[in-house]
Length: 329
Ligand code: TXA
Ligand code: MG
Image 1: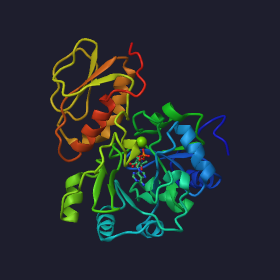
Image 2: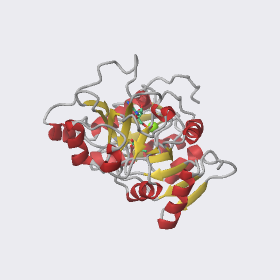
Image 3: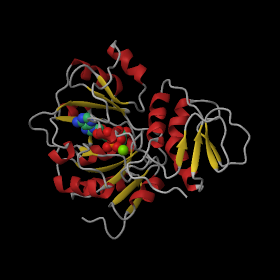
């Protein structure tokens, strides 16, 4: 199976899901929808397929991947669940939560996908297409977000194709993703720790645990516990200016709530100030404003509560200085 010459795009239905499962079994790369963002799937046990996946994304190979399975029962065969992990899985799976757990000695996920770690990140997605694909394939599927490394995550099949056309075997298209930001990642290797804010708000997790999540004990720039959390990530081409009230000349505006009157290109994350709607629109609005040709995007303030924590995390990363500075024209 090879990514050349073309990438096949299928509307997700029972037949195309069978084709996709067969493609994964043959070592192919399949982009598929989850409720958070589109993932780029490969057979987690197939080292060659995982190597092709890293190459397609242009991702640094030290960055471990999330293994997706259809059920908690399948997840239990891959990793050891302590009491906190059991509780979180019971409360939130299927759903936008990833758990980092000690892997079992016979865990079939290849070392390349785990970046050599003794832990494995597991997720049971809720999206019907993801569920059906995992069910049909019958084993763990590693799937990072289906974008070129460093780009914003895709929330539609068109976003996937913009980044990966010709580099992957197929895309299952089931329309836009409902949640719009990636899963929340909690490590249960010790006391439950929030590694990445995401589509499941922190408060919901803390309520189930009956205690606060702790923060990672090492600053991410020194030793990233979730390497995808490197500070410049999710970068659009245009520069971002955060906490803006109004656009300056030459800027586009990413608004939240009531937007100021302006002639600049404007997209509103949620005119009514709804954080769930804002999360679902975040990456597609960033892509669209990037495509408007503005060299800068002014971003209005988003409240830091509920999904606002994940939204502000992604905006801060998108605004961070780039590892390789490019001229902005
Ligand atoms: O919503 C999501 O989580 C999407 C969909 C496709 O499921 N996936 C996703 O994957 O966002 P990715 O590869 O873009 O982000 C996975 C994050 C990375 O930051 C990675 O470093 C972290 O999970 N990760 C994976 N395994 C880990 C481990 N054993 N310990 C700590 N962090 C881990
Ligand atoms: Mg990603």
